[in-house]
Length: 232
Image 1 (cartoon, rainbow, N blue to C red):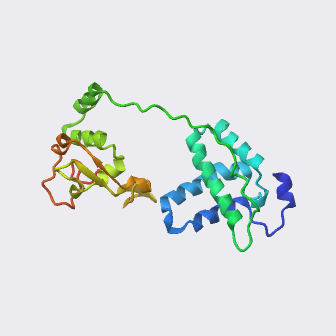
Image 2 (image 1 turned 135 degrees about the vertical axis):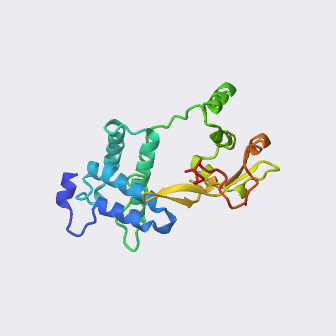
Image 3 (image 1 turned 90 degrees about the horizontal axis):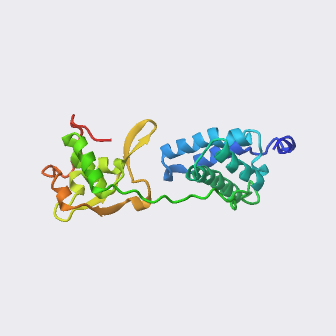
């Protein structure tokens, strides 16, 4: 890395400035909160290892990338999924550098073939009936419908809190999930679910529907706190 820094020309783009530029170029298709996370990854996980403010973007090699992945695992203790997320940012940015036109910043993507730590799928641990009933009994009465609905619908909490009365079909138990509460710049805002597949229709038992207060305007929040505010 030091040799590459000393040999670089004054007008060569350095790694960290390019990564920040790449995040800026993502535009409106990526939410600001996601960009903020990317910038935090650049500052905390990429720049310290590569000395990215002084390493030319075209000096990154596959060996450096492999060493960085190992550093994330051994020095930072990152889990395989976390490493995959961080590596995905660097790999995508380097791929964009190789596709840059009219003049590519690099000849090829040095991160494209790096093998990442294997992610081992864990067996899903379902609640037994006794466990479900125990939690239901321990909850305050007003939260029991929220709890049962969450288990039966398998909606994420941010999706569940964004539901309105009109999203529930009381005759079929169909639940239309099209939005979710998200944090953006320290504030909650209503946006799309986590992924494109997050927009979906799921179903809950009619016994669960019967516990919901649906005799209200379709635009009202399905779940409210004890003070009448939205549940976040």
